[in-house]
Image (cartoon, rainbow, N blue to C red; front, top):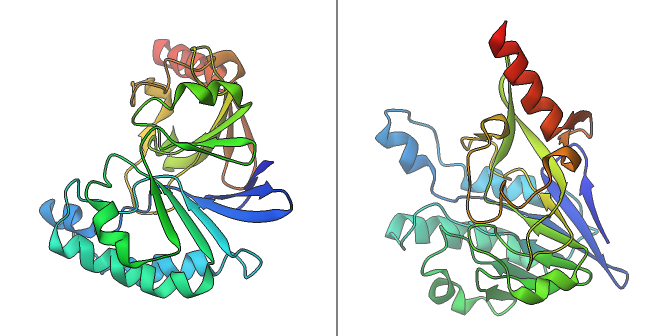
Length: 243
């Protein structure tokens, strides 16, 4: 059973009474991307580790739904941040699963020294009754036997005038073969990442949005506030553009 932890960008998956904490899109080392654009922000590695640990001592199992790091390859500065992050959080978790994301190239070699961490390829894996995959690649065909899929990658948001892009949760039904019956798209755990505005319907990988039913795709704020269906919100934006 899967449920968003409202007020956060994390979810809980209950597997036979064991609670797993799920997060996506940490993008450790993303600060270097900002520096290239002339924006200097301090290293966020420790801050994100503390945010993760603050979600509760009741969780001793963690699943990362892709993009633990930001660099596509394995840059030395990226490896340093990943190790520092993991050295801080691993004493608190008995088991960690990572669904490999498009930014996680070379991650398996880096994580070999962490016995409690298992890296699974981009096509994903089953965790209880939920199929976990990052979303930049289609999941294994067997995922279609699952009612629920959990993915990241999209960094979903809705652009609101006066507030900018607001991170959101996405709950949708699917319409393509070879996918779980429904999808939950997580907001990124890294709060300083750029967000993708869902209202432009830009294709973000092989699954989203072409494989979802817009009229049944529900959008929620991080606090659980219902914003409407994606079809309704897109139609509203189009109507406003005509006025």
